[in-house]
Length: 148
Image 1 (cartoon, one colour):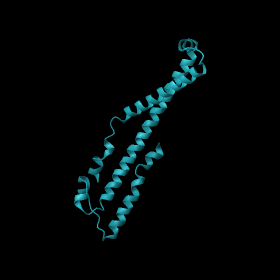
Image 2: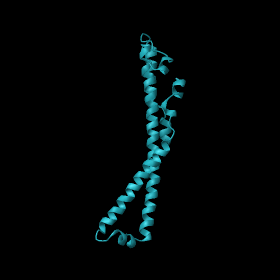
Image 3: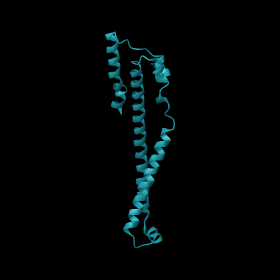
């Protein structure tokens, strides 16, 4: 089981932070453009150069500050979502390994599950132990989420 966890998809988490930065950046630029277009729409009778000249430093300072705050919150949310997805992948991988313990045909097993134990269907304590393992998988990492 330890070897299976070491080879799991959980360790392939390289580059996810850059994806969060890109997603948060796209949302921030979209939000800023929507604010600017709405402000330009309110002053539709002016040309762009007149509208730009009429805006104050306070307008630009406020909108840039809000965009930076939006970007920061966006990064935090996307990093949290990536953590949730990694946790789901880890739990799904472990539950698939436990399910493959029930498979008897070696040709249908993955290379990792071939090295694992098989369950004896005629031995009730083995089946009960397997059932307890299956019930324990959703509880993995529960203390971590309570701390977050």
